[in-house]
Image (cartoon, rainbow, N blue to C red):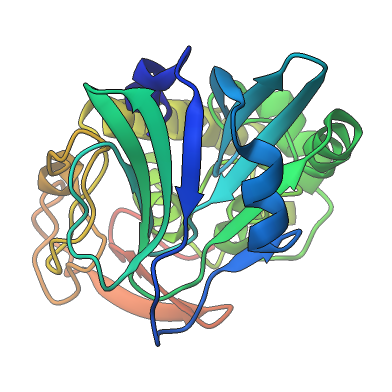
Length: 271
């Protein structure tokens, strides 16, 4: 999302709209009218990522702000036409004909949009763990080696590691050959190194493939293209299928923290 939205840098915000809808609303902080009034006329000076949030930096002549958008599970930001207007939660109108608007589309209304002053953005950053694309094995081990939590849940804790969600946590643990329910405290030093390499490899490959578009077909890149990483999934939503790596195991599903996770019992034996 961030890479595609870089095309909007330098554009000016002409208006921000919230389409009328009877669906569950997303959260705005502060209120939507306040965000609209403050952001109108601002120039987009940068587009950044903070964990699983997109940060659109806005610049007025005498002020700098950040529009922090958290898509959550079912949200996407698109420069193309959204999947439908019924679930379009916000439209940022721009002064560029070729990049006329940023649409925030969210099927389940779980997203959050916050307008932050620099001190608030800094406080948010400090609440997040190391970024998943740059985290080291030493950082992971130092944070988690005494924890009895299942490693799958720890990977999704944004205060421990910023940027990993449910789907990619399952794929990362498969590549690292670690059972998702393994207590963090039982991982060996070599396992922490395997895990770090798998985090980097899986996420970089997924970014290059523009993410994963699942069976519902709703996720797409900001340019309107479907993701391709779903064709590289080994375990996610493949329960009951033969493991593509070992050819002996059958992908299993289990619940951890109320979320489904998937693993190969042969490639990822429990300790």
